[in-house]
Every structure is written in structure tokens, then in C-alpha cells.
Length: 426
RNA sequence: GGAGUGAUGGCCGAGUAGGUCGAAGGCGCUCGCCUGCUAAGCGAGUAUACGGUGUAAAGCCGUAUCGAGGGUUCGAAUCCCUCUCACUCCGCCA
Image (cartoon, rainbow, N blue to C red; front, top):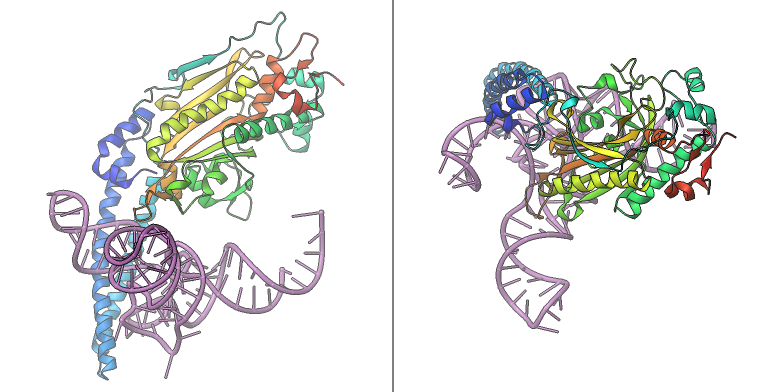
């Protein structure tokens, strides 16, 4: 959520941000109108309350002195009714105002390229040449099916489309990757491992920006206000919701493995085959809480932490600077890391690393004090996949496939696979 | 699931025949004094948000906040209702 002061004092800056994102600039004027209305109501109701308070004290004095106060009491009865009515009006205005505020996206960092679609994202890095195959590389779902390590049909039967069973060494590979990633981030990059709840409440979803605007993307549990986590970012960021951290608490690095659940509303027909777009997938997520003045360097380090995993696995990737049209709701700046997928001859997103600045911190009320006496300030939050595990499995299957249909295990992963060097049909 | 107890400021903890309670006291913290150093001791100060005023900061005025929401009342931390969370006992269970 944006600082209301920015909307009041620099409305044109926000309108401009909205235009660059392809969003409506009118939201700003809607906010301003409601904000003015709120102030009018507030002034009126507060002066009435001031009156009521002072008269009530007078009543107390009169009664203590054993005097009659009936006239004042009758008078205040009307004032009380008026206050009640104005409070109702005020609440209605504030609810709407708050909703508008919660649905305005973050202002992009000045370095974000302006663009109209994902085609305007800017490549900032490319690592490793894409491999040349002496044979026609297959997509991972074909490889996996032949090897008998993924069963999409069973997923469809037992649950529905976009669910999958991992079997045998397939399941082992997924688990190996989770451990591999967690070990590197905790052991080499200084992150603290978290295993959070996989179900969160509405306040948490609102804190990270997944609500109220994107409720249709989430799986909601019936008869409750609980949601399946769409990413570990939600529970881990909300770990410090409504807290005031000490200066020495920052920066804080967390890494968490969780399954992620997404309804994929609006993605019908896209990526229907393979592991790319599942309703449930595993992800190792990095989350940082930092001082405002250090968030961009911390963000860059986090991007590098994600890249490290791909480099250890020898998987070719590129990094994209996301343009205003593709930035997403909360981030002020976002780099996507895309891994090479030979089976379909394209790069696919495998990590998304964002600096939210104080956007989430303001929503979730996550603050810190520089000094014991200082006023609390909002922290900056940063997060990124490190990495999406299912897509990593897909990338390994495609990049390490061999002509006989087997798949070599990346060297770094062999210890995690119990010494298995090649996945063959069993 | 059944029965019960509780939720107060950074922390602990008073405060119920409703009125001067933003809230005693303690701890912690900040500043000062004292002191070879440290510790102890002494003094002062220590919530947040919003609105108004102010060039700005400070200050001043006002409103709200004693788990959340609603109700009763001229007036609620104190009374009533609903909800959430925590703890205790019983039952059930991985």
C-alpha cells in the first residue's frame, strides 16, 4: 500500500505510475475525493465528541455536588444520536477509502523500463550457452513418462487437471532439490530456515498484497477465512506482521520450503502439459527484511543467490528486468530468472525476485526502530524463489536428457540422490 | 468436542457498586548527577494513530485506542452480547 501522503501531495506522480503500468489513473482521484470527504466527516464528528466529553464531565461534577443535571443529559441524548449516525457514515467512507488504497499498485522504481507487455522486459544477463543436442530433445513430460517418474494421468484421476504424482526417482529428485537448495541458502548464503504453516488467514494474505485484489487466484478453504498459501512469501513475511523490530534485527534472511497452491484462474488452456503450471507445486523461497537504504543491494544479492542454484546445477539461464507492464502489483522492482528448456526451445521463469520497498511493510505494519528512542520506520521487504522446484525438475530432465531416454543427474545433486548418477527406466 | 479461566502501555502488573484513567506501581529504555572503572545509587523523561493549527520542525488544541466488533448510558478498561486468541481440566487422536 502506498503512503497516503504521496497520494495527497503528489497525485500526479501516482497517476503517472498508473499510466506506465497500464492501470487506471482515476483511482487517484477516487482516493482524493474520499479522503476529502473523510476529513469533513471527521471534523464534524470529533467536535461533537469533544462537546459530549466536556458536558459529561460537567454532569459528573453536578451529580457529585448533588445537583440536578437532567437538562444536560437530555440535550446530550440528541448529540449522541448524531454522533452515531456520523460514525456510521465515516466508517462507510473509510472502508471504501481503504479498499481503494489497498488496490493501488506500488510505484515502480525509476530504473524500471517502461513497457506495454512482457515483450518489453529487458535482458540483463545470460549465463551459459544453450546446449546443442545431437538428437531432437524431448519435452520433460515425455521424458518423465517414458522413465515412469511422473504420472499426470493419476493426478487427473485422483484430484484433477494440473495435479501430478511423482514416483520413484522422480520423487527422489524433487526431494533432493529441496534439500540441496535449502542447504546452500542456509549454509552458504546466511538464511535462517523456516517451515511455516501452509494455510494462512485473510490478514496475512492482505499483508503481502494477495488480497483483496487477487482473491480469485487463491484457494480458499470453506467455512473459514483461511487460504492455502500461494507462496511461502505470505506466511514468512507475515511472521513479523504488526511488529517493531530492533535496528540490530536487520537485515533478516529467511528461507522456506513450502508447497504452493494457485487456482490459475484465467490461465485455462495455457501450459496444459508438464510441470510448468500446476495447482500445487513446491518452492523454496527467500525472504528478506532490510533497512530501507540497503534494500537494493540486498535485493541484488538475493538475485545472485537464486542464480547460484542454477549455476551449481549447470543449467543455462537469463535474467530479465521486468518492465512496468509486467512488474506485478506489489514490487517496485523485479528481476525474473529464466531457465533454458530445450524441449520447447524457450526460456521459462524459474525465479522471480522482487523488492517491494515499504509496500508490504506498510500493509503488514512491519517496522523497526533505529534507536531505542527513535520513531518506528517501515522496513523494506524483498523476496524471490530460490527456486521453483517443479520447474527445476523439468529443466533438469530436459537439459540432462540423453539419447537413450535416460537422464543424467547433475553432479552437485548426486550426493542428494543417494549416489544415483543416471535416472533410467526401471 | 465438553467444562472453566484469562486477554491492560516495550515487558510485568494494579485497576469492577460505570465519571477527574492514556490508565498506579515495577522492570526496561533515554538523558543528567554521582562514582578510579564497572555495578549500585539519585533526579528527570519515556505509547501510537488520525484531524486541526503551524513555511517546516517543535509546540499547542481535539479525537480515538485497556484482544476485535457491536450494545446499554449524558458518560464504559469497568455492565451486556458476539467473535478471536491463550491457558487449565476431561474426552478423542497422528
